[in-house]
Image (cartoon, rainbow, N blue to C red):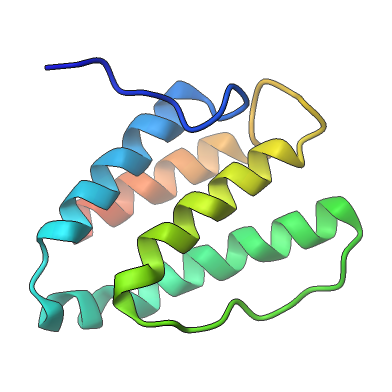
Length: 110
């Protein structure tokens, strides 16, 4: 098994690893189940978008609902954005909470 790659040098390894696990599990879900969990994932995506907006001083915006197929891409991008907008720090603001949210989400996706 290869070592997980991190999304960005600013994304903590534990967050990157857990995000990869969530995305892998999401890809295996039947559409009906993905639709069931879409609200939970969208809430996390929107929460990250709100954190990024607050950190950058940008106006808050609603992340568009493009369906369950794009949710993992949106989540990955927002984790990356949260990392990049942390001012080059080695951790994402709220990393512990984000890591816990991702673990919780992964466990729900069984």
